[in-house]
Image 1 (tube, rainbow, N blue to C red):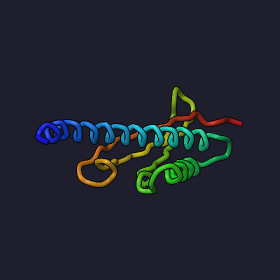
Image 2 (image 1 turned 120 degrees about the horizontal axis):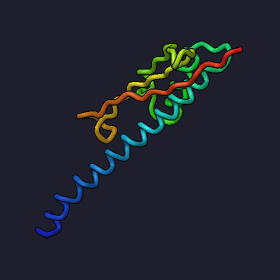
Image 3 (image 1 turned 30 degrees about the vertical axis):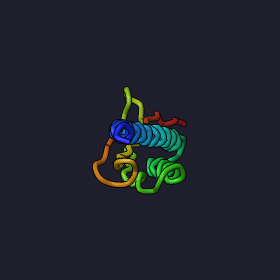
Amino acid sequence: MVDFVLVLVILVPMFLGVLQVALVLFVRNTVASAASEGARYAATLDRDPAYGAARTRTQISGALAGRYAQGVSAPEITVAGAPAVEVTVHVVVPALGLGGPSVSFDVTGHAVEEQP
């Protein structure tokens, strides 16, 4: 019985740590994909950057919880003299998705605007 407890003291925190890393990576990859797609959508001909931000919010809300789609911004920028759109998403991922200490990061997607 004592051996079982000693092994669990080591294995449970390791298992929870692996779950936390998996959750953060899943959220980061999903948000990065949505930000890139939103930037490409906003960069198409005759689209406002607000359309890209809305598209990003929709994709994040469809794949994750809506709380991850709150920090979306889409300003127009210049890349090497060409007009472009940058979609930035600020995300806060709580510990194991429950609450407590959290991990926060920013993800950015870029796309050069189409010209007529």
